[in-house]
Amino acid sequence: MSVRAFAAKAVKSSFEPMTFDPGPLADGDVHVRVTHCGICHSDLSMLDNEWGISQYPLVPGHEVVGVVESVGRSVTHLRAGQRVGLGWQCGACMRCEWCSRGRQHLCGTQAATIVGRHGGFATHVRAQAEFAVPIPDAISSELAGPLMCAGATVFTPMLTHKVTAGDRCAVVGIGGLGHLALQFLSKWGCPVTAISSTRSKEAEARAFGASAFLATSEPAALAGAANSFDYIISTISADADWNALVNTLRPQGRLVIVGVPNSPLSIAAFPMIASERTVAGGRLGSPADVTQMLDFAARTGVRPMIEKFKMSDVNRAMDRLRSGQARYRVVLESEG
Ligand SMILES: [Zn+2]
Ligand SMILES: [Zn+2]
Image 1 (cartoon, rainbow, N blue to C red):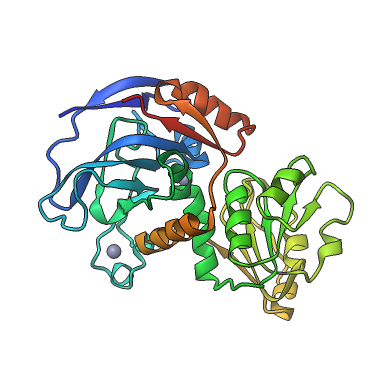
Image 2: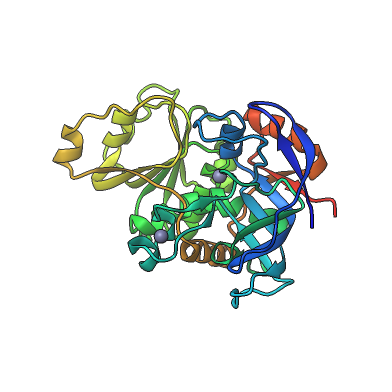
């Protein structure tokens, strides 16, 4: 059995066809034929070895959607022909304290789909069966891809931080993650303010569910919103005026950071202490969290807005992502 993939041979290089043998299927794994794969900003970070963990040849792709082709001997809950999605995590020990609690995304020995193994820019991927999550019929395969990382990344913190209907919320950064966060929070029953540098995305943000819009390039925009929000999710990978954002939180409000800014955060302690505010990191969750996210999206119509490319056009697709101009998520489609 051989897998055809698109691989980068070196840091920041372009993708070239590569064939590899995935070996025998492990008892607990599934072999999935890829039909679609979203491209996430983390794929670009891995291509550029921004985090120092990339290995080449690198086959990115961790917003994978496909069809189970075969299952390992001990897999009983999935069968050939089933449509599944796979995100950043593809394995965990399933025995530690965190796995036992159903918090497999916090397992200390977890495996990531594109770290030290090959991801979804390929005809097939392998994963531990628990991490191949069935996709509800209501969600098309091309739109399911971006939910597997971007969607899960913005949805899980809503559960972790117990966001409830009516909470006053804000989303910082209206891009691949932010346009989904606006939809999830508004469908959750929350009034949501979109916060962006300029007003260029205001009309689209309102269409995604924002009931208000703040442009941080306008004077005193954040200062004017002091004590406004119970929950803020920041999706930007740039620096921001974090102290001004903390001050937009109401008492006991939470600022959850899921994008990775360039610089360490410098945040004054007193405004956090005085109003019992929280600044936290957030990430995508367990397979159960992903299942809940997909079910909620299927029922409420939360869907990514995508630009679609053929898998063989992966270099042009990656350039489009790198440009920062994509609205809002890039998806590769397999050619058979
Ligand atoms: Zn991702
Ligand atoms: Zn574990």
